[in-house]
Image (cartoon, rainbow, N blue to C red):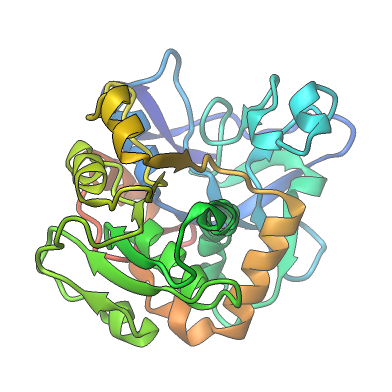
Length: 325
């Protein structure tokens, strides 16, 4: 079967690999139809891996002799360790992540536990690539909402940094939450139009002012975005690091300043579960028209190496690999 294989630092090639045939109890071999191109894929490609790997974790697939489409939860937890017992499956001590430390979806077929596949019905099945990232945003938003109990105001002025897909999804969930009544601004360093901003009724700012935002959600994953968030947030405010920072980035603030300004820093790492996947499917099904605008370029597998090594997605959208193109 055809697959995109990362074999070195910024080295990706389309090659013929062995088709998975042997399955263990509870596993299936699914036909991959669409895969979202995540920035995590690009970062893993840029860093290189210890061994050759098929990436791709935002997967839409089908099962032979079954109707409909399925979205993959790529996190396979052991169910036995102390983190699994606390329902913190993303922190499982034996975590396997398809498309990260195990082969993933940039291939014609994928081997996966059957319980990791979540059925969905949408007019455009390519929208299924948004289910996994939206499920992670569901968990992230729940952590943000829990943290807002620490604030001294009930209507926090909120700043989202980064208008990429993470920024879109967090903004969408906050504006649709009955437990959030804050005013939201968006800051993105590009001047590219972001139609979803107007659809959500949030304000885009060219240069955010310091000491205004009670809550800042950093969605870009860049060192500049993180430094901006910690510089701008009000005293006794909250900064959520949601965009994935590279391993070499350090926190650009001293513990003394965190203490004196009483800043709360929270993070949210993945967290796709049966609950969050189900919630994500329900959100997209209720508002397909909104999520449709978040699909960017549709490319064949043959163009994926260029997409991963020359990172240039359309702002605020997800590029999709169509395995049948």
